[in-house]
Length: 70
Image (tube, rainbow, N blue to C red; front, side, top):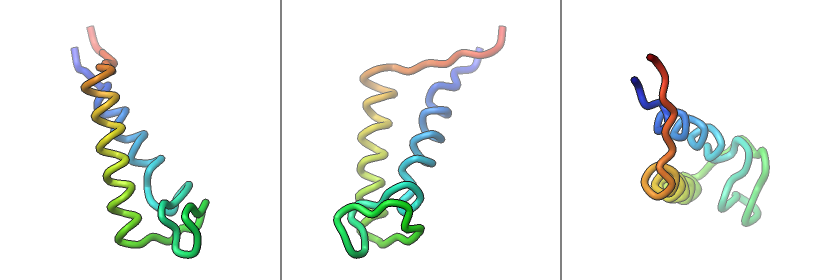
């Protein structure tokens, strides 16, 4: 049995937290920008910290597991 929970959670969070795709914290002209499709080094750092925090919560604290196979 393969545990796909960490893979699915990581991919979903990566797509949702890509700076500039849905939102960007901090934005170029505002604190939060939505759909700007631009990014900066500071926003990459902020989104990486948010990603690390959320993936830690989902995988370690909550313990999300998705088993496939027989």
